[in-house]
Image 1 (spheres, one colour):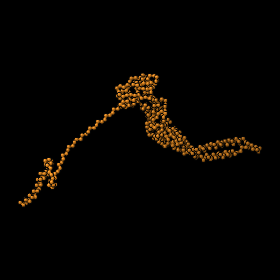
Image 2: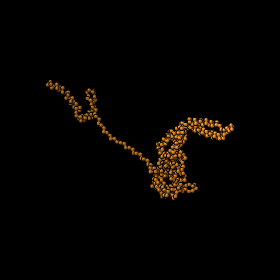
Image 3: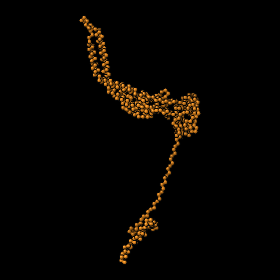
Image 4: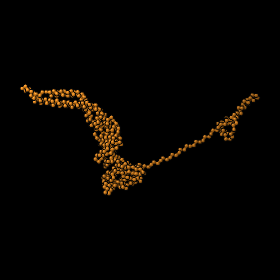
Length: 425
């Protein structure tokens, strides 16, 4: 009994603790434990804790997660409508129909409700309503040379019978300005001609490029423009800051080299057309200006080399020349002291033969002295200019080397017609 009583005393607290823990849900299985906790939180009223040692600690219930809301993308605003370009199908240029055609010929499509204006440099040419009129005499009535009409959004032109040649030329060198939706666009009435770039050719003294157009435009409205210079080392320009030339204007393109070398473009009138003359030039240290061409370069080199050789020879022979001049001077003095008399019967009489011989010797010696003095002067001048001659020969060698770099260089250009505020290629 004593042993049993001792076991009961020892095991009793453990049994009681087990029961309390089991009823409190602390030793219950995990699923049941969660349910009992939630129930206990809902059914039991909160107990005011008097002391931390008397009341067991209550665990905070696990909050139920809120289901995630689906992501809804905000609708993007519609893209702005593209502005309608009324000139999307309008060409930059168009060829006029053949003069022999009197029936309407379609040229290009025009925007709806567009207005058409004729822009020309010839005051005799006007557009009234749909008629293109030509009037060269103020006292005469204007003559209709062509008709414009719009059908199915297409602009058509019909020529009158046998229009004047000058009127056709004036119209060809004009343009039509189309206005629609507060915007305007110009259409040239002649197609441009594509040309090859200008290639520098130093075998020619002057290169000429002409504005060959039929019918030819008025020269005073023709312009020439340099577009690109390829590999040319342009340093500065003179006479054409924007590389655009009008008739009788010129432009100098200076190159960034040690020696003054330039290419000159001059716009001239050649018959009924405008032309550009292209020349290349350079200046030597002496200030002599020369044309940069193969023929002129070879000729100038021969001249400078000859002077250089002469200066070298003069330096080597100046001592001998002066010595020879001194000998001639002494010889002349001796000739002048020569007697020209003869003794006849013991009396000195003038000898005409000796007089003539002395005069000839004096003249010959004086001429030789004069020639030698000229040679001395020339030699002294060549010796004084020897450094300058060598400097010019050195500069010419540099110029020849630079000429090889620009020979065959392609330069892009264009001729265009100034019609009002517009440029027609």
